Image (cartoon, rainbow, N blue to C red; front, side, top):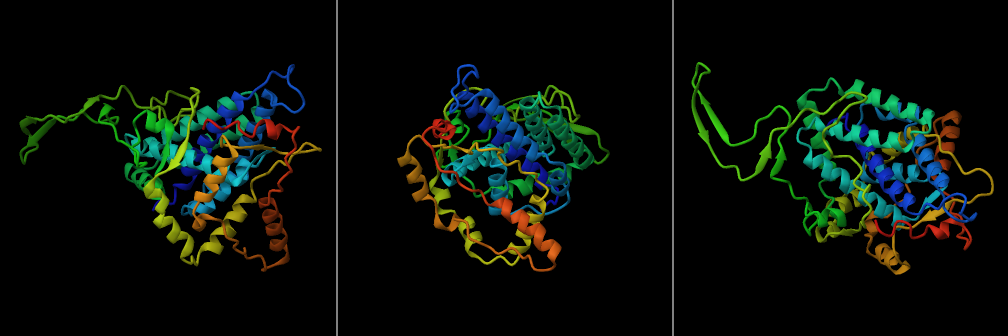
Length: 389
């Protein structure tokens, strides 16, 4: 298990979350001069995106994130994104957050599986950050935050060996190995089977620095080539045109990690039969974990570095719903295994008064006060804005 995996996991999943939110928020935009007070505008979309990105790339939070550490459990990581998604005036209920998180995790799992080289997971991360910078091009302060994270990535990962990147990739694959959620985009593109497992391609460019398969060379004990044997590999491979740029600016070449929602098309998620069993996740939830409280204590301290911007004034937070109908949402809630429901774990906060006050503040920020739905609020107009995801 690599202790350098967490930043890459967090940034890439966060990037996928921003892709989804941006695509659906744009779909509901109404010109500001024509919008009523209760209607969604481009200014509102930018506000939500700016708030979430600013929180995500908070300097103190990034400094804590990049310290060598083991991956969080799936539940703990989900807590981070739940908190991040509520960093602005937007609110998601449990079922909608589940659906959003499913899309995020399956998209990044697909990208990790298809990386030509283990090192290319860094290019995937750069693609996400490049796109995020496009969301906030009019906000220089937030752009600076993202650029600082770029430089931190280059500093921390630029000198790692191929073996270290392989360990990072293996750690990511272990994290994702029990997730087999079917996503309509992947099913329609025939890159995912009906059981939720991905189809690996047998065509396209080979990893940079390697040759197209089809030739075996034999050498003698002096290192001289003595024989060549050609074979049919059954694929349609080509040589990679060039290596992607690992600099702050440049052509990444690799397309994995770019915004697949930029073309407007419906996206749905379905839990496969194998995932419904959720054997390993259920075991993780039921089996007592002696490190659970310590993990949450550390998570609470790390989350303390995230500056959450609460809505100012009388404006209530608006709700987003990823389901077409109430019946669909209720069905999703009914099929959610009880074992995945969050249980209360008491976080240790008794060592000294100063730590008590700090943890009390942090734990207080974890609580999201649900606003009542008003028929005239923006929330009601946006209840179904992610229906097509």
